[in-house]
Image (cartoon, rainbow, N blue to C red; front, side):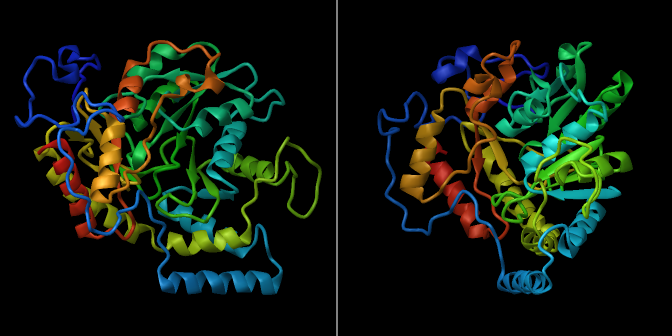
Length: 430
Protein backbone atom coordinates (compact mmCIF):
# COMPACT_ATOMS: atom_id res chain seq x y z
CA UNK A 1 0.00 0.00 0.00
CA UNK A 2 1.23 3.48 -0.80
CA UNK A 3 0.72 5.55 2.32
CA UNK A 4 -0.34 9.21 2.22
CA UNK A 5 2.61 11.57 2.41
CA UNK A 6 5.18 9.21 0.87
CA UNK A 7 6.06 8.54 -2.73
CA UNK A 8 6.97 5.14 -4.06
CA UNK A 9 10.70 5.83 -3.53
CA UNK A 10 10.30 6.76 0.14
CA UNK A 11 10.49 10.55 -0.20
CA UNK A 12 7.98 13.01 1.28
CA UNK A 13 5.52 14.22 -1.31
CA UNK A 14 3.14 16.64 0.34
CA UNK A 15 4.81 19.48 2.25
CA UNK A 16 2.23 21.80 0.65
CA UNK A 17 -0.62 19.89 2.25
CA UNK A 18 0.31 20.20 5.91
CA UNK A 19 -2.67 21.59 7.81
CA UNK A 20 -4.71 21.35 4.63
CA UNK A 21 -2.80 24.01 2.72
CA UNK A 22 -2.94 23.56 -1.01
CA UNK A 23 -3.44 20.49 -3.14
CA UNK A 24 -6.49 18.28 -3.58
CA UNK A 25 -7.78 16.04 -0.82
CA UNK A 26 -7.29 12.91 -2.92
CA UNK A 27 -10.13 10.97 -1.24
CA UNK A 28 -13.45 12.65 -0.63
CA UNK A 29 -14.11 16.37 -0.37
CA UNK A 30 -15.28 16.71 3.23
CA UNK A 31 -12.84 18.69 5.37
CA UNK A 32 -11.63 16.82 8.43
CA UNK A 33 -12.90 18.57 11.57
CA UNK A 34 -9.70 17.70 13.47
CA UNK A 35 -7.35 19.29 10.95
CA UNK A 36 -5.41 22.14 12.45
CA UNK A 37 -6.79 21.63 15.95
CA UNK A 38 -4.46 20.86 18.85
CA UNK A 39 -5.28 18.32 21.51
CA UNK A 40 -6.35 21.11 23.87
CA UNK A 41 -7.52 23.73 21.42
CA UNK A 42 -10.90 24.07 19.75
CA UNK A 43 -13.80 21.68 19.65
CA UNK A 44 -12.82 20.09 16.34
CA UNK A 45 -15.67 21.96 14.68
CA UNK A 46 -18.42 19.82 16.10
CA UNK A 47 -18.87 17.69 19.19
CA UNK A 48 -21.21 14.71 18.79
CA UNK A 49 -23.40 13.55 21.64
CA UNK A 50 -21.75 11.24 24.14
CA UNK A 51 -22.28 7.65 23.04
CA UNK A 52 -24.58 5.44 25.08
CA UNK A 53 -22.94 2.31 23.64
CA UNK A 54 -20.69 0.03 25.73
CA UNK A 55 -17.03 0.95 25.93
CA UNK A 56 -14.78 -0.66 23.31
CA UNK A 57 -11.43 -1.16 25.08
CA UNK A 58 -8.02 -0.85 23.40
CA UNK A 59 -7.19 -4.49 24.23
CA UNK A 60 -8.96 -7.41 25.90
CA UNK A 61 -7.22 -10.62 27.04
CA UNK A 62 -9.50 -13.58 26.32
CA UNK A 63 -10.00 -16.57 28.64
CA UNK A 64 -13.19 -18.56 27.92
CA UNK A 65 -14.68 -20.44 30.88
CA UNK A 66 -13.46 -23.83 29.63
CA UNK A 67 -9.95 -22.47 29.28
CA UNK A 68 -9.91 -21.11 32.81
CA UNK A 69 -10.88 -24.56 34.05
CA UNK A 70 -8.19 -26.23 31.93
CA UNK A 71 -5.55 -23.80 33.25
CA UNK A 72 -6.67 -24.44 36.83
CA UNK A 73 -6.34 -28.20 36.29
CA UNK A 74 -2.81 -27.88 34.89
CA UNK A 75 -1.77 -25.64 37.76
CA UNK A 76 -3.32 -28.04 40.29
CA UNK A 77 -1.30 -30.87 38.75
CA UNK A 78 1.89 -28.80 38.98
CA UNK A 79 1.27 -27.89 42.59
CA UNK A 80 0.37 -31.44 43.53
CA UNK A 81 3.39 -32.92 41.81
CA UNK A 82 5.87 -30.22 42.85
CA UNK A 83 7.05 -29.46 39.30
CA UNK A 84 7.10 -25.67 39.25
CA UNK A 85 9.68 -24.79 36.61
CA UNK A 86 11.02 -26.35 33.39
CA UNK A 87 8.55 -29.20 33.66
CA UNK A 88 5.94 -30.87 31.43
CA UNK A 89 3.82 -27.75 30.81
CA UNK A 90 6.87 -25.90 29.51
CA UNK A 91 7.88 -28.81 27.30
CA UNK A 92 4.39 -29.18 25.81
CA UNK A 93 4.17 -25.43 25.14
CA UNK A 94 7.55 -25.48 23.43
CA UNK A 95 6.59 -28.43 21.24
CA UNK A 96 3.25 -26.94 20.22
CA UNK A 97 4.74 -23.52 19.48
CA UNK A 98 7.59 -24.95 17.40
CA UNK A 99 5.22 -27.09 15.34
CA UNK A 100 2.86 -24.17 14.67
CA UNK A 101 5.72 -21.90 13.62
CA UNK A 102 7.50 -24.37 11.32
CA UNK A 103 10.72 -24.71 13.32
CA UNK A 104 12.40 -27.62 15.04
CA UNK A 105 12.94 -25.91 18.38
CA UNK A 106 11.27 -23.49 20.77
CA UNK A 107 12.67 -22.37 24.12
CA UNK A 108 10.25 -20.85 26.65
CA UNK A 109 11.61 -18.02 28.80
CA UNK A 110 10.43 -15.43 31.31
CA UNK A 111 9.58 -12.58 28.89
CA UNK A 112 9.81 -11.37 25.32
CA UNK A 113 12.65 -9.11 26.39
CA UNK A 114 14.53 -12.11 27.77
CA UNK A 115 13.89 -13.94 24.49
CA UNK A 116 15.56 -11.11 22.59
CA UNK A 117 18.62 -10.88 24.85
CA UNK A 118 19.14 -14.64 25.02
CA UNK A 119 18.83 -14.95 21.25
CA UNK A 120 21.31 -12.13 20.72
CA UNK A 121 23.81 -13.66 23.13
CA UNK A 122 23.49 -17.06 21.47
CA UNK A 123 23.76 -15.59 17.97
CA UNK A 124 26.93 -13.74 18.95
CA UNK A 125 28.68 -17.09 19.38
CA UNK A 126 30.53 -18.72 22.23
CA UNK A 127 33.41 -16.22 22.50
CA UNK A 128 33.49 -14.47 25.90
CA UNK A 129 33.34 -11.01 24.31
CA UNK A 130 30.02 -11.78 22.60
CA UNK A 131 28.70 -8.65 20.89
CA UNK A 132 31.17 -6.30 22.61
CA UNK A 133 32.14 -3.51 20.23
CA UNK A 134 29.76 -4.77 17.52
CA UNK A 135 26.69 -3.02 16.15
CA UNK A 136 23.29 -4.57 15.54
CA UNK A 137 20.88 -2.88 13.14
CA UNK A 138 17.39 -2.28 14.55
CA UNK A 139 14.49 -0.27 13.14
CA UNK A 140 13.96 3.16 14.64
CA UNK A 141 10.21 2.54 15.08
CA UNK A 142 10.34 -0.40 17.48
CA UNK A 143 9.81 -0.83 21.22
CA UNK A 144 12.53 0.05 23.72
CA UNK A 145 13.24 -3.63 24.48
CA UNK A 146 14.52 -4.36 20.97
CA UNK A 147 17.41 -1.92 21.28
CA UNK A 148 17.84 -2.41 25.04
CA UNK A 149 18.39 -6.13 24.51
CA UNK A 150 21.23 -5.31 22.13
CA UNK A 151 22.83 -3.11 24.81
CA UNK A 152 22.36 -5.72 27.55
CA UNK A 153 23.90 -8.35 25.29
CA UNK A 154 26.98 -6.15 24.91
CA UNK A 155 26.30 -4.60 21.52
CA UNK A 156 25.49 -1.16 20.16
CA UNK A 157 22.15 -0.50 18.41
CA UNK A 158 22.39 1.07 14.97
CA UNK A 159 19.10 2.63 13.97
CA UNK A 160 17.86 2.22 10.42
CA UNK A 161 14.84 3.68 8.68
CA UNK A 162 11.84 1.69 7.45
CA UNK A 163 9.89 1.10 4.28
CA UNK A 164 6.74 3.28 4.46
CA UNK A 165 4.61 0.50 2.97
CA UNK A 166 5.51 -2.12 5.59
CA UNK A 167 6.63 -0.23 8.74
CA UNK A 168 9.63 -2.59 8.66
CA UNK A 169 13.26 -2.76 7.61
CA UNK A 170 14.11 -3.69 4.04
CA UNK A 171 17.39 -4.38 2.24
CA UNK A 172 17.21 -0.85 0.85
CA UNK A 173 17.04 0.71 4.32
CA UNK A 174 19.56 -1.65 5.94
CA UNK A 175 22.40 -1.63 3.40
CA UNK A 176 23.29 2.07 3.91
CA UNK A 177 24.00 1.52 7.62
CA UNK A 178 26.03 -1.69 7.34
CA UNK A 179 29.74 -1.45 8.11
CA UNK A 180 32.59 -3.64 9.34
CA UNK A 181 31.43 -3.46 12.96
CA UNK A 182 28.00 -4.93 12.23
CA UNK A 183 27.17 -8.37 13.67
CA UNK A 184 23.55 -8.71 12.65
CA UNK A 185 20.11 -7.27 12.01
CA UNK A 186 16.84 -7.39 13.96
CA UNK A 187 13.70 -7.15 11.84
CA UNK A 188 10.49 -6.36 13.73
CA UNK A 189 7.14 -7.72 12.55
CA UNK A 190 5.20 -4.61 13.56
CA UNK A 191 1.55 -5.18 14.37
CA UNK A 192 1.78 -8.85 13.42
CA UNK A 193 2.68 -8.24 9.75
CA UNK A 194 5.56 -10.35 8.41
CA UNK A 195 7.21 -8.05 5.89
CA UNK A 196 7.54 -9.26 2.28
CA UNK A 197 11.19 -8.18 2.56
CA UNK A 198 12.06 -10.59 5.40
CA UNK A 199 13.37 -13.37 3.17
CA UNK A 200 15.39 -10.93 1.05
CA UNK A 201 16.86 -9.45 4.21
CA UNK A 202 17.79 -12.96 5.38
CA UNK A 203 19.58 -13.49 2.06
CA UNK A 204 21.43 -10.19 2.46
CA UNK A 205 22.53 -11.11 5.98
CA UNK A 206 23.78 -14.53 4.90
CA UNK A 207 25.75 -12.97 2.05
CA UNK A 208 27.39 -10.52 4.49
CA UNK A 209 28.04 -13.07 7.25
CA UNK A 210 25.49 -11.45 9.57
CA UNK A 211 22.72 -12.96 11.65
CA UNK A 212 19.05 -12.08 11.23
CA UNK A 213 16.89 -12.13 14.35
CA UNK A 214 13.12 -11.79 13.97
CA UNK A 215 11.57 -9.72 16.74
CA UNK A 216 8.23 -11.47 16.47
CA UNK A 217 6.81 -10.16 19.75
CA UNK A 218 3.66 -9.16 17.84
CA UNK A 219 3.51 -12.01 15.34
CA UNK A 220 2.19 -15.27 16.85
CA UNK A 221 0.62 -17.28 14.04
CA UNK A 222 1.47 -14.73 11.32
CA UNK A 223 3.16 -15.65 8.04
CA UNK A 224 4.14 -14.42 4.60
CA UNK A 225 4.03 -16.65 1.49
CA UNK A 226 3.46 -19.65 3.72
CA UNK A 227 6.52 -19.02 5.91
CA UNK A 228 5.76 -18.52 9.58
CA UNK A 229 7.07 -15.68 11.68
CA UNK A 230 10.11 -16.90 13.57
CA UNK A 231 11.12 -19.41 10.89
CA UNK A 232 12.76 -17.14 8.30
CA UNK A 233 15.77 -15.71 10.14
CA UNK A 234 18.32 -17.48 12.31
CA UNK A 235 15.99 -17.18 15.30
CA UNK A 236 12.75 -15.56 16.38
CA UNK A 237 11.77 -13.95 19.69
CA UNK A 238 8.10 -13.84 20.77
CA UNK A 239 6.37 -12.22 23.74
CA UNK A 240 3.51 -13.58 25.86
CA UNK A 241 2.75 -10.23 27.53
CA UNK A 242 -0.94 -9.89 28.55
CA UNK A 243 -1.94 -7.72 25.57
CA UNK A 244 -0.50 -10.08 22.94
CA UNK A 245 -2.65 -12.34 20.74
CA UNK A 246 -1.88 -15.18 23.16
CA UNK A 247 -0.43 -14.75 26.62
CA UNK A 248 1.04 -16.66 29.52
CA UNK A 249 0.57 -13.69 31.86
CA UNK A 250 4.27 -12.96 31.49
CA UNK A 251 6.67 -14.89 29.31
CA UNK A 252 8.35 -15.27 25.96
CA UNK A 253 9.69 -17.91 23.60
CA UNK A 254 12.59 -18.30 21.16
CA UNK A 255 12.26 -20.21 17.89
CA UNK A 256 15.12 -21.62 15.84
CA UNK A 257 16.02 -24.46 13.52
CA UNK A 258 19.61 -24.37 14.80
CA UNK A 259 20.32 -26.94 17.52
CA UNK A 260 23.40 -25.03 18.70
CA UNK A 261 21.26 -21.93 19.29
CA UNK A 262 18.68 -24.09 21.06
CA UNK A 263 21.28 -25.50 23.41
CA UNK A 264 22.82 -22.09 24.09
CA UNK A 265 19.39 -20.59 24.83
CA UNK A 266 18.63 -23.35 27.32
CA UNK A 267 21.91 -22.67 29.10
CA UNK A 268 21.42 -18.90 29.21
CA UNK A 269 17.86 -19.12 30.59
CA UNK A 270 18.99 -21.20 33.59
CA UNK A 271 21.78 -19.10 35.12
CA UNK A 272 24.28 -20.24 32.49
CA UNK A 273 24.40 -23.77 33.88
CA UNK A 274 25.47 -26.65 31.69
CA UNK A 275 22.53 -28.72 32.97
CA UNK A 276 19.26 -28.17 34.85
CA UNK A 277 20.07 -30.63 37.63
CA UNK A 278 23.66 -29.52 38.12
CA UNK A 279 26.87 -28.74 36.34
CA UNK A 280 29.28 -25.88 35.91
CA UNK A 281 28.21 -22.36 35.00
CA UNK A 282 29.54 -21.94 31.46
CA UNK A 283 27.71 -18.76 30.35
CA UNK A 284 26.84 -15.49 32.06
CA UNK A 285 23.18 -16.42 32.19
CA UNK A 286 20.31 -15.26 34.33
CA UNK A 287 17.06 -16.49 35.93
CA UNK A 288 15.17 -16.39 32.65
CA UNK A 289 13.10 -19.57 33.15
CA UNK A 290 9.35 -19.71 32.53
CA UNK A 291 7.46 -21.15 35.51
CA UNK A 292 5.16 -24.14 35.05
CA UNK A 293 2.25 -21.96 36.18
CA UNK A 294 2.85 -19.45 33.38
CA UNK A 295 3.43 -22.30 30.94
CA UNK A 296 0.02 -23.73 31.86
CA UNK A 297 -1.63 -20.46 30.81
CA UNK A 298 0.41 -20.29 27.61
CA UNK A 299 -0.29 -23.90 26.69
CA UNK A 300 -4.06 -23.48 26.91
CA UNK A 301 -3.89 -20.16 25.03
CA UNK A 302 -1.80 -21.85 22.34
CA UNK A 303 -4.75 -24.13 21.63
CA UNK A 304 -6.82 -21.04 20.79
CA UNK A 305 -4.26 -19.29 18.58
CA UNK A 306 -5.81 -20.03 15.20
CA UNK A 307 -9.30 -19.24 16.49
CA UNK A 308 -8.15 -15.91 17.91
CA UNK A 309 -6.32 -14.95 14.72
CA UNK A 310 -9.39 -15.80 12.61
CA UNK A 311 -11.49 -13.37 14.66
CA UNK A 312 -8.91 -10.63 14.26
CA UNK A 313 -8.76 -11.17 10.50
CA UNK A 314 -12.53 -10.93 10.28
CA UNK A 315 -12.52 -7.61 12.12
CA UNK A 316 -9.61 -6.39 9.99
CA UNK A 317 -11.67 -7.04 6.85
CA UNK A 318 -14.41 -4.78 8.20
CA UNK A 319 -11.87 -2.02 8.76
CA UNK A 320 -10.26 -2.65 5.36
CA UNK A 321 -13.61 -2.15 3.65
CA UNK A 322 -14.69 0.93 5.63
CA UNK A 323 -11.60 3.08 6.03
CA UNK A 324 -10.97 3.85 2.34
CA UNK A 325 -14.32 5.66 2.34
CA UNK A 326 -13.32 7.97 5.19
CA UNK A 327 -11.36 11.20 4.72
CA UNK A 328 -8.01 11.75 6.33
CA UNK A 329 -7.10 8.14 7.16
CA UNK A 330 -5.48 5.32 5.16
CA UNK A 331 -5.41 1.70 6.30
CA UNK A 332 -2.17 -0.29 6.18
CA UNK A 333 -3.30 -3.21 4.02
CA UNK A 334 -1.77 -6.66 3.99
CA UNK A 335 0.25 -7.45 0.84
CA UNK A 336 -0.80 -10.37 -1.32
CA UNK A 337 0.09 -13.77 0.24
CA UNK A 338 0.53 -12.07 3.62
CA UNK A 339 -1.33 -13.56 6.58
CA UNK A 340 -1.00 -11.11 9.48
CA UNK A 341 -2.38 -11.93 12.91
CA UNK A 342 -3.49 -8.29 13.36
CA UNK A 343 -2.07 -7.88 16.82
CA UNK A 344 -2.55 -4.26 15.84
CA UNK A 345 -4.66 -2.72 13.10
CA UNK A 346 -2.64 0.19 11.73
CA UNK A 347 -3.84 3.21 9.81
CA UNK A 348 -2.10 6.46 8.88
CA UNK A 349 -3.60 9.89 9.41
CA UNK A 350 -3.29 12.64 6.84
CA UNK A 351 -0.80 15.30 7.78
CA UNK A 352 -2.32 18.06 9.88
CA UNK A 353 -4.77 15.80 11.75
CA UNK A 354 -4.09 15.87 15.47
CA UNK A 355 -3.76 12.28 16.72
CA UNK A 356 -4.22 13.21 20.37
CA UNK A 357 -7.41 15.12 19.63
CA UNK A 358 -8.76 12.21 17.58
CA UNK A 359 -8.08 9.69 20.34
CA UNK A 360 -9.59 11.99 22.97
CA UNK A 361 -12.75 12.48 20.92
CA UNK A 362 -13.08 8.76 20.17
CA UNK A 363 -12.90 7.94 23.89
CA UNK A 364 -15.00 10.78 25.28
CA UNK A 365 -17.64 11.05 22.58
CA UNK A 366 -17.83 7.53 21.13
CA UNK A 367 -16.75 5.22 23.99
CA UNK A 368 -13.84 3.84 21.97
CA UNK A 369 -10.39 3.40 23.48
CA UNK A 370 -7.83 3.58 20.70
CA UNK A 371 -4.97 1.12 21.05
CA UNK A 372 -1.42 2.18 21.85
CA UNK A 373 0.77 3.08 18.89
CA UNK A 374 3.65 0.96 17.58
CA UNK A 375 5.27 3.27 18.38
CA UNK A 376 4.43 6.87 19.25
CA UNK A 377 8.00 8.13 18.88
CA UNK A 378 11.11 6.59 17.30
CA UNK A 379 13.87 5.16 19.48
CA UNK A 380 16.44 7.82 18.62
CA UNK A 381 14.12 10.33 20.31
CA UNK A 382 14.18 8.37 23.58
CA UNK A 383 16.46 10.02 26.19
CA UNK A 384 18.23 6.75 27.04
CA UNK A 385 19.47 6.44 23.44
CA UNK A 386 20.26 10.12 22.91
CA UNK A 387 24.02 9.51 22.74
CA UNK A 388 23.81 6.92 19.96
CA UNK A 389 24.57 8.13 16.44
CA UNK A 390 21.51 8.28 14.21
CA UNK A 391 21.40 9.42 10.63
CA UNK A 392 18.33 10.88 8.94
CA UNK A 393 15.29 8.69 9.73
CA UNK A 394 12.46 10.64 8.09
CA UNK A 395 10.04 7.76 7.43
CA UNK A 396 10.19 6.48 11.01
CA UNK A 397 9.74 9.97 12.42
CA UNK A 398 6.78 10.71 10.16
CA UNK A 399 4.91 7.43 10.54
CA UNK A 400 5.47 7.25 14.30
CA UNK A 401 3.84 10.66 14.55
CA UNK A 402 0.88 9.98 12.24
CA UNK A 403 -0.30 6.40 12.64
CA UNK A 404 -3.07 5.12 14.88
CA UNK A 405 -4.07 1.61 15.98
CA UNK A 406 -7.75 0.71 15.99
CA UNK A 407 -9.14 -1.59 18.69
CA UNK A 408 -8.99 -5.28 17.78
CA UNK A 409 -9.50 -8.24 20.12
CA UNK A 410 -9.62 -12.03 20.12
CA UNK A 411 -13.36 -12.04 20.77
CA UNK A 412 -14.36 -8.75 19.17
CA UNK A 413 -17.91 -8.49 17.87
CA UNK A 414 -18.75 -6.96 14.49
CA UNK A 415 -20.91 -4.44 16.34
CA UNK A 416 -17.86 -3.20 18.24
CA UNK A 417 -15.94 -2.72 14.98
CA UNK A 418 -18.93 -0.80 13.56
CA UNK A 419 -18.88 1.42 16.65
CA UNK A 420 -15.22 2.20 15.96
CA UNK A 421 -15.94 2.93 12.30
CA UNK A 422 -18.95 5.13 13.13
CA UNK A 423 -16.84 7.05 15.62
CA UNK A 424 -14.11 7.66 13.08
CA UNK A 425 -16.68 8.76 10.53
CA UNK A 426 -18.09 11.32 12.94
CA UNK A 427 -14.71 12.56 14.15
CA UNK A 428 -13.09 12.76 10.71
CA UNK A 429 -16.17 14.21 9.02
CA UNK A 430 -16.81 11.38 6.56
